[in-house]
Length: 214
Image (cartoon, rainbow, N blue to C red; front, side, top):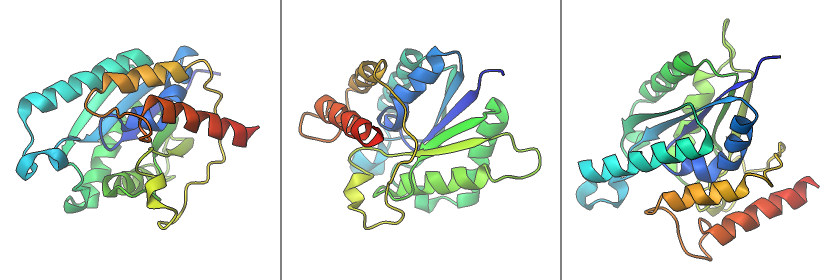
């Protein structure tokens, strides 16, 4: 059996790390072709007037490319959707962008956001990916997985349905430290403990799901 091709569709730079970096690194290490695709700029919501600074955007994308290299990804691709404003873009346009990435990478496996998430961009990314991967004749995607993003998924406080209740688990004992190193590479996104994006909290989250699995 040939190795799988994996596509990670994330809303913002750092979501691919928070969501499934340890799993992505594990799959890449065993010879699978991993591709990362990021829909939004990840900046405007924190910028005065919602204006994206070109130099800051370039630096953030360099971080994303560096993280992709650390994970062993074959490619890192970007679109330019407005940060935390995906709901101002026609859903069809988001779907078409995801379909372009699917055509370029021909994945067997896709990872993306869980829909029960506080962040509107995360929810719409899930909807676009689910639409783009629907089982039409000739569709190549065999598996679709939804990940949580700490400080976004759990902060919905199970008031948005469906709540995140994972049923698939990966042993990331060998790649968790790499995930933490990738998060540290995103210097503008990492946080100090007890924030859910801190290294300590990310380790605790992994251990928690490990205890659920066992």
